Image (cartoon, rainbow, N blue to C red; front, top):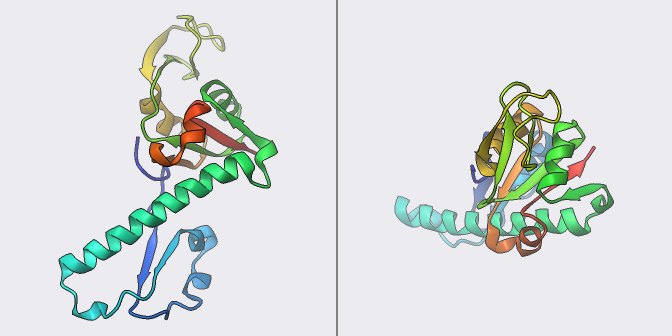
Length: 181
């Protein structure tokens, strides 16, 4: 699965300065883009760095931001103000997603397991039946991690794919969860 959200143009904007000059830079960004801004202040004199040294510092900050972002997503899913309106696990998440009830989803990057997908209507679930419960057509075996991103795009649901090592609670809950509309 792709590392960041499905359909996203950029996951992170990094503003790097030698001192804390970023001020209100994020406030001018459209929509929720301000949530994806990493501020790297106090890097020292960055204008004298080689391209490789600068890139190394930025990559380190990006990895830190991604870990913090991933941890925050899991915390919001389990303990956030809307945690009562969430689903966890493959079966519930797939069902609610295909019913059009999901507004955002998060999954670990090494999501394992197989599913069955209908050749006619596209319904996906983990039941062992070779006949689709929705339309009665034949179903084929597929890998969950292969069908999940296109399924999220089909229902226009943002899908965040996060590192498994920072999502122990989500891994234990089936590796996937979603916020309901």
